[in-house]
Length: 215
Image 1 (cartoon, rainbow, N blue to C red):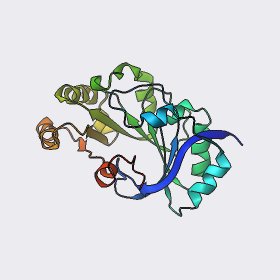
Image 2: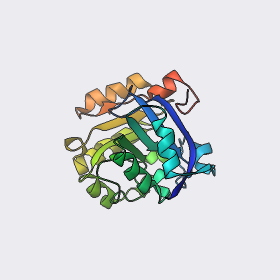
Image 3: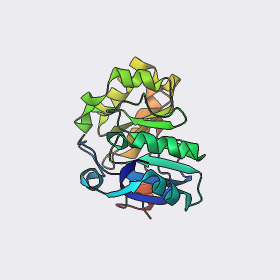
Protein backbone atom coordinates (compact mmCIF):
# COMPACT_ATOMS: atom_id res chain seq x y z
CA UNK A 1 0.00 0.00 0.00
CA UNK A 2 1.15 3.55 -0.73
CA UNK A 3 2.65 5.96 1.78
CA UNK A 4 1.95 9.58 2.66
CA UNK A 5 4.06 12.24 4.35
CA UNK A 6 2.31 13.09 7.60
CA UNK A 7 2.83 16.08 9.87
CA UNK A 8 0.39 14.87 12.55
CA UNK A 9 -2.70 12.80 13.23
CA UNK A 10 -4.70 14.22 16.10
CA UNK A 11 -8.13 14.38 17.72
CA UNK A 12 -9.76 17.75 18.26
CA UNK A 13 -12.90 19.75 17.55
CA UNK A 14 -13.73 20.63 13.98
CA UNK A 15 -13.18 24.39 13.88
CA UNK A 16 -14.63 25.21 10.46
CA UNK A 17 -17.28 24.21 7.90
CA UNK A 18 -20.81 22.98 8.63
CA UNK A 19 -19.20 20.38 10.92
CA UNK A 20 -17.92 23.06 13.30
CA UNK A 21 -17.89 21.98 16.92
CA UNK A 22 -17.97 18.23 16.27
CA UNK A 23 -15.20 15.91 17.47
CA UNK A 24 -12.97 15.09 14.51
CA UNK A 25 -9.74 13.29 13.72
CA UNK A 26 -7.37 15.36 11.59
CA UNK A 27 -4.80 13.86 9.27
CA UNK A 28 -2.46 16.75 8.48
CA UNK A 29 -0.24 16.04 5.49
CA UNK A 30 2.94 18.00 4.82
CA UNK A 31 3.84 20.10 1.82
CA UNK A 32 2.38 23.10 0.01
CA UNK A 33 3.92 25.29 -2.68
CA UNK A 34 1.13 27.88 -2.93
CA UNK A 35 2.33 30.52 -0.44
CA UNK A 36 -0.80 32.36 0.71
CA UNK A 37 -0.04 35.67 2.43
CA UNK A 38 -2.04 34.69 5.52
CA UNK A 39 -0.83 31.08 5.74
CA UNK A 40 -1.03 29.80 9.32
CA UNK A 41 0.63 26.46 8.59
CA UNK A 42 3.96 27.53 7.10
CA UNK A 43 5.77 24.95 9.21
CA UNK A 44 3.53 22.22 7.82
CA UNK A 45 4.04 23.42 4.25
CA UNK A 46 7.82 23.22 4.56
CA UNK A 47 8.05 20.08 6.67
CA UNK A 48 9.15 16.68 5.36
CA UNK A 49 7.01 14.89 7.92
CA UNK A 50 6.85 11.23 8.81
CA UNK A 51 6.48 8.62 6.11
CA UNK A 52 3.48 6.46 7.01
CA UNK A 53 1.73 3.71 5.12
CA UNK A 54 -1.92 4.37 4.46
CA UNK A 55 -2.71 1.28 6.53
CA UNK A 56 -0.86 2.77 9.50
CA UNK A 57 -2.67 6.09 9.10
CA UNK A 58 -6.00 4.26 9.11
CA UNK A 59 -5.05 2.38 12.29
CA UNK A 60 -4.02 5.61 13.98
CA UNK A 61 -7.31 7.25 12.99
CA UNK A 62 -9.26 4.25 14.31
CA UNK A 63 -7.52 4.55 17.68
CA UNK A 64 -9.47 7.75 18.43
CA UNK A 65 -12.89 6.04 18.01
CA UNK A 66 -14.38 8.97 16.10
CA UNK A 67 -16.39 8.69 12.90
CA UNK A 68 -15.48 12.09 11.42
CA UNK A 69 -12.08 12.57 9.73
CA UNK A 70 -10.56 15.50 7.85
CA UNK A 71 -7.52 15.26 5.59
CA UNK A 72 -5.82 18.65 5.56
CA UNK A 73 -2.38 20.22 5.20
CA UNK A 74 -0.51 22.04 3.77
CA UNK A 75 -2.19 21.14 0.51
CA UNK A 76 -3.02 17.43 0.73
CA UNK A 77 -3.69 16.98 -3.00
CA UNK A 78 -0.06 17.84 -3.77
CA UNK A 79 0.63 14.31 -2.54
CA UNK A 80 -0.71 11.96 -5.21
CA UNK A 81 -1.26 9.17 -2.68
CA UNK A 82 -3.68 11.38 -0.75
CA UNK A 83 -6.38 10.21 -3.18
CA UNK A 84 -5.78 6.63 -2.08
CA UNK A 85 -5.87 7.69 1.57
CA UNK A 86 -9.22 9.44 1.08
CA UNK A 87 -10.73 6.36 -0.57
CA UNK A 88 -9.37 4.10 2.16
CA UNK A 89 -10.96 6.26 4.85
CA UNK A 90 -14.31 6.12 3.04
CA UNK A 91 -14.00 2.35 2.66
CA UNK A 92 -13.58 2.11 6.43
CA UNK A 93 -16.88 3.94 6.93
CA UNK A 94 -15.54 7.31 8.08
CA UNK A 95 -17.31 10.54 7.18
CA UNK A 96 -14.35 11.97 5.29
CA UNK A 97 -13.64 15.64 4.65
CA UNK A 98 -10.92 17.14 2.46
CA UNK A 99 -9.61 20.66 2.96
CA UNK A 100 -8.08 21.92 -0.29
CA UNK A 101 -6.95 25.18 -1.83
CA UNK A 102 -8.60 24.87 -5.24
CA UNK A 103 -5.27 24.71 -7.06
CA UNK A 104 -5.11 20.96 -7.51
CA UNK A 105 -7.66 19.06 -9.63
CA UNK A 106 -10.47 17.49 -7.62
CA UNK A 107 -11.96 15.36 -10.39
CA UNK A 108 -10.37 12.15 -9.08
CA UNK A 109 -11.34 12.68 -5.44
CA UNK A 110 -13.59 9.84 -4.28
CA UNK A 111 -17.22 11.00 -4.65
CA UNK A 112 -17.93 9.94 -1.06
CA UNK A 113 -15.53 12.61 0.22
CA UNK A 114 -16.91 16.02 1.17
CA UNK A 115 -14.60 18.63 -0.33
CA UNK A 116 -14.09 21.94 1.47
CA UNK A 117 -12.54 24.19 -1.16
CA UNK A 118 -10.90 27.52 -0.35
CA UNK A 119 -11.43 29.99 -3.19
CA UNK A 120 -8.41 32.26 -2.85
CA UNK A 121 -9.10 35.98 -2.60
CA UNK A 122 -6.85 38.80 -3.91
CA UNK A 123 -5.58 39.33 -0.36
CA UNK A 124 -4.11 35.83 -0.40
CA UNK A 125 -1.71 36.90 -3.16
CA UNK A 126 -2.54 33.73 -5.11
CA UNK A 127 -6.08 34.27 -6.38
CA UNK A 128 -5.05 33.22 -9.89
CA UNK A 129 -4.60 29.57 -8.90
CA UNK A 130 -8.31 28.74 -9.15
CA UNK A 131 -9.46 27.18 -12.41
CA UNK A 132 -12.96 27.32 -13.85
CA UNK A 133 -12.62 23.60 -14.43
CA UNK A 134 -12.29 22.95 -10.71
CA UNK A 135 -15.44 24.94 -9.97
CA UNK A 136 -17.33 23.03 -12.65
CA UNK A 137 -16.05 19.73 -11.28
CA UNK A 138 -17.09 20.75 -7.78
CA UNK A 139 -20.70 20.93 -8.97
CA UNK A 140 -20.61 17.16 -9.33
CA UNK A 141 -19.15 16.61 -5.85
CA UNK A 142 -20.30 16.75 -2.24
CA UNK A 143 -18.73 20.09 -1.36
CA UNK A 144 -18.50 23.31 0.59
CA UNK A 145 -16.71 26.54 -0.31
CA UNK A 146 -14.93 29.13 1.80
CA UNK A 147 -13.38 32.53 1.23
CA UNK A 148 -10.67 33.68 3.63
CA UNK A 149 -10.96 37.46 3.53
CA UNK A 150 -8.40 40.06 4.55
CA UNK A 151 -10.31 43.22 3.58
CA UNK A 152 -13.51 44.72 2.18
CA UNK A 153 -12.05 44.21 -1.29
CA UNK A 154 -11.81 40.48 -0.59
CA UNK A 155 -15.42 40.42 0.54
CA UNK A 156 -16.50 42.15 -2.65
CA UNK A 157 -14.48 39.58 -4.61
CA UNK A 158 -16.44 36.84 -2.81
CA UNK A 159 -19.70 38.50 -3.82
CA UNK A 160 -18.58 38.67 -7.45
CA UNK A 161 -17.52 35.02 -7.46
CA UNK A 162 -20.76 33.96 -5.80
CA UNK A 163 -22.78 35.72 -8.50
CA UNK A 164 -20.60 34.40 -11.33
CA UNK A 165 -20.86 30.76 -10.29
CA UNK A 166 -24.14 30.88 -8.28
CA UNK A 167 -22.22 29.27 -5.44
CA UNK A 168 -24.80 29.56 -2.68
CA UNK A 169 -27.37 27.76 -4.80
CA UNK A 170 -25.10 24.69 -4.81
CA UNK A 171 -22.93 24.75 -1.69
CA UNK A 172 -22.67 26.13 1.83
CA UNK A 173 -20.39 29.16 1.35
CA UNK A 174 -18.32 30.37 4.31
CA UNK A 175 -16.76 33.78 4.87
CA UNK A 176 -13.72 33.37 7.11
CA UNK A 177 -12.06 36.65 8.19
CA UNK A 178 -8.41 36.77 9.18
CA UNK A 179 -7.83 37.60 12.83
CA UNK A 180 -6.89 41.22 12.08
CA UNK A 181 -10.32 42.05 10.64
CA UNK A 182 -13.09 43.39 12.87
CA UNK A 183 -15.53 40.48 13.07
CA UNK A 184 -18.49 42.75 13.81
CA UNK A 185 -17.71 44.69 10.67
CA UNK A 186 -17.55 41.51 8.62
CA UNK A 187 -20.84 40.38 10.14
CA UNK A 188 -22.33 43.66 8.95
CA UNK A 189 -21.02 43.06 5.43
CA UNK A 190 -22.64 39.63 5.37
CA UNK A 191 -25.97 41.01 6.57
CA UNK A 192 -25.93 43.93 4.14
CA UNK A 193 -25.01 41.73 1.18
CA UNK A 194 -28.30 39.79 1.41
CA UNK A 195 -26.33 36.77 0.20
CA UNK A 196 -26.69 33.60 2.30
CA UNK A 197 -23.04 33.49 3.24
CA UNK A 198 -22.11 31.80 6.52
CA UNK A 199 -19.80 33.84 8.75
CA UNK A 200 -17.13 31.42 9.95
CA UNK A 201 -14.88 32.12 12.91
CA UNK A 202 -12.18 29.51 13.41
CA UNK A 203 -13.36 27.81 16.58
CA UNK A 204 -10.11 25.88 17.12
CA UNK A 205 -8.11 29.12 17.17
CA UNK A 206 -10.47 30.65 19.71
CA UNK A 207 -10.09 27.66 22.03
CA UNK A 208 -6.44 26.74 21.34
CA UNK A 209 -4.62 29.82 19.97
CA UNK A 210 -1.41 29.14 18.00
CA UNK A 211 -1.84 25.37 18.24
CA UNK A 212 -3.24 24.48 14.76
CA UNK A 213 -6.23 23.07 16.61
CA UNK A 214 -4.05 20.46 18.32
CA UNK A 215 -4.94 20.32 22.00
